[in-house]
Length: 381
Ligand SMILES: NC(=O)c1ccc[n+]([C@@H]2O[C@H](COP(=O)([O-])OP(=O)(O)OC[C@H]3O[C@@H](n4cnc5c(N)ncnc54)[C@H](O)[C@@H]3O)[C@@H](O)[C@H]2O)c1
Image (cartoon, rainbow, N blue to C red; front, side, top):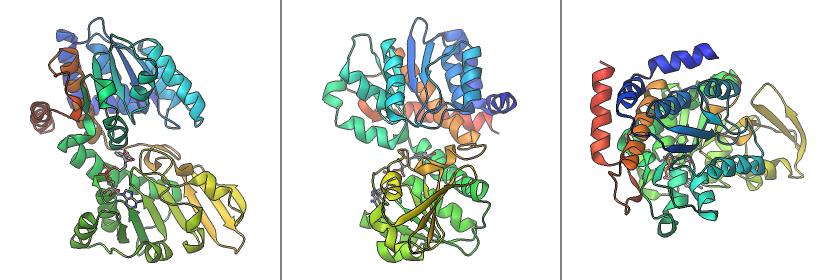
């Protein structure tokens, strides 16, 4: 694993260049940065870049995705890591509060957990920070009047949208399906719920892997786009009935529930690619009286046998599939290097006071997108 962390660090060309620059310019000197982001090799590269800029970094992971080797590596490099891998929401909440107890000057959030917890016990020295995801932006947008500090949303950068959400998540969800199930995609019916950037990339990746892909999308305009992109857009019940693989990518909760049990095909594989493990209501499905037995099979696969004999497979307990199962790799190094370069530049802008206090939950400034895009084109030539 240490080899993998070294491999990732040496391949993150943008972050390496920024770390070298930060070591000279020290934008975070005397500042504490609190983070609540998946702890895996690529975030190691980001957190050490922030540290190179003079920050005291205090971090915890997200639910279920913390990799112990990443934690050990960070600790050895002087990053303060709170807690370990957990699927227990109350425990995870305690870790977040421990990060906030250090009263970080800057917060790097992933899903809005840190900023929401901050509002319960606000403190003066918070300068602002960043939010990584769509789900976090939705949560925090309603709290603008309370947050009153610059918070830049990485997800709303066009670079993040096409490089990570569309291309990289599509590839890594396909890679995860193959790695965890060892099943072919050829000729299988795959149903993707949600046709935002993430759903678009997943649909394209599975089609490129010779599956027949259908899309369920709430927004009729995006449904039309899916149809123009060549995907089937059946009604929901027909889509579920035909699907060998169902993948949620909506950012919403309760997208697949026990109410769908009767309409699912024997041996269907249920997968969540959205940020929160609530898109598939796993607990409610498991607790349904139509579920006769539950078998925790090979790592990452739970099989439910229904009273009528049908089997339903759920991957990684409904947690984000590309960060679970055996030997999870997450999204490609290039895509994360881009997204994390945006993170580093945005945190630098907040630390340097280059943002207005009215920039509360706003997209990455165009000038930062341009700098990062130019740097990628130069460094990955
Ligand atoms: N797995 C990963 O590595 C990874 C990476 C980036 C983002 N994400 C997550 O993926 C999710 C989707 O991200 P996005 O950027 O595509 O978001 P998005 O908001 O652009 O797209 C989500 C789409 O889902 C649709 N939708 C919502 N509820 C629905 C429902 N019940 N049925 C059908 N469609 C529905 C919406 O209309 C929207 O078009 C988010 O939770 C995001 O945080 C995961």
